[in-house]
Length: 359
Image (cartoon, rainbow, N blue to C red):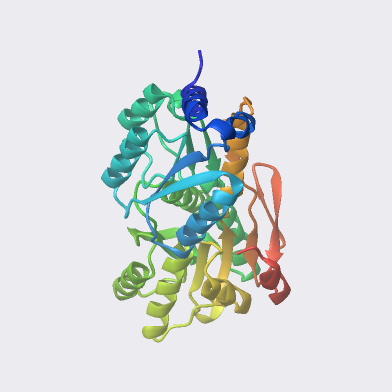
């Protein structure tokens, strides 16, 4: 069966041919010029439904997509900001279908609730590429492929680092009193990172005092941390599910007259983070205010463009494509973590590394 994209381009070619014939009959001496002219290549239209702009990671992700799909590269990008609302994203996808785009790229705000609109894209013959957060569907054929991070592995890396670092500080499992500032509830990043912490807390006997969403924002992270410091007087670890929450948590810790750092024996509050995109967070990790950051790479644009190139050439991309990511710390006492018999090195953050990073 000829797919929808091929039909669109065949019809376009037919229209161009008809127009050339009409112009040839009325232009006399320009007839040969028209016969020898080649129609311009049609731009590939990509509709991108971004979930919002809640964090520095999200902004870097959006910019990566804009850089990948430019007019100079033969694309037309239709960008729609979902403003953290699934309903707006579903409306955007239906608009893309009506506009007859060639591809739809979706960064979903939550995992569930996409089956109906994805069935509509399938019926329209439009390939859907999921980026960053995953979707849960009754049928995996409702989307073409996914590219992003292994969020559960990210959580496990952070927790294994904490276990090893605490041992170098002479701390046992029940010495750790942890609070978790979660991301947007129901998002893949929140689900995976929270699951990692809960599993390791049970495994090592950590005192996980509270888990409260911070919505991946600095303001909410500050608000949540301030309340937790009032509720509990023995917090020594705060597990923040992104950089912006970590920055807010540090503000609250300092406002309470406490110190964010890695000296657990002397009363520091150890701050952990994910993403590694925000410049302030990276500098805090460099000086030890943030103890470790598990990288979440936002540069999905080139990867998505490569997938579209494969599809345009008639190929079949991998259904799932995980990106490689780094664990950063300024503390040299832990040089690697091991998850399911696989060793992952810990990169000791230096100014040279910061200066050469892509974001």
